[in-house]
Length: 377
Image (cartoon, rainbow, N blue to C red; front, side, top):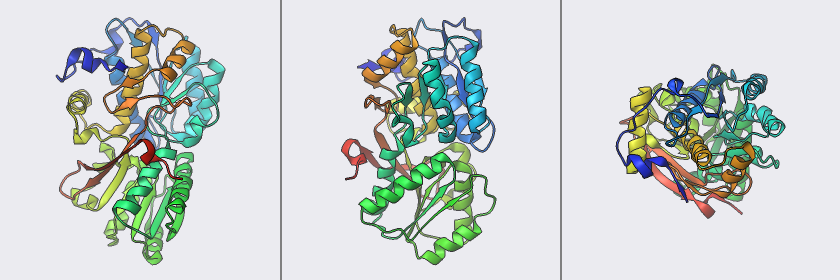
């Protein structure tokens, strides 16, 4: 098993940071993701995680990783990745969390034959036979099972109202949740989608109230999710809300007073802000020192993905195809979890449910799922 460098040399002390720009690079791993647009919150966390990995590359390896902004659009993503991969030969690229952008970029991975390291949950990315896509957050096909099971088996709710958004990510998870609730024999009180840049959720909140739902289940990007939760609580909707991982981001939770988050939970691949293990705590402290903001699971997932690739490059995978093969065949002990490909590029197979108690913006881990717990028949 390949182990993360933090276990090999740094122990549990805070990591020191050297500026990447000062290094003479011997590996080119561009970072291509949304820095602007409505996915800039998620993209910013992802960028930070990738940069932190580059700055802590294994001893003897120096990597160059310029950031290319996709602008939160499919066209922008394709253009940015083409530019990044045209500038010089890349061993891999750290790419967007946003499913809509990943759909546009995935064919280019095959054209350039370069592995793409992503944390996008969109299920179809690893279900089309593309050998150059490697996902370091759970496939939505898995993590939505945790989402639905927590609602039904732990909260004991029987009338969920389901809200998605109209992005590829939003619709992918929306459909999976519909299927998962059906497999759990739970009919939906209502199911509706909203635009990712919606400015008012009052009509949706009214429909949820009228539906008689006993829980609100949300699978959207951060912007509409935050607005929906705020307006739901302001309107007196006091049923539990269980969201997708976009809520577990410091920029998202910063929009709330802690009391507004009471009775709200979220699925997430990991919650480094909860500092559940010594390794995660050390990483979270180092992240906060580096970026002056709390960590989240998106940053940690991208950090682990880029660090795994860098560790394999340092170990001799010095061509894109050699790296793709190593990513598919190596078990890697990262900070958040142990990563192992299922043969399709899905590397992560753990999920957590975290909840807020109304006294803090830091959630507590309520439930953990892995392996067979992330499948439904």
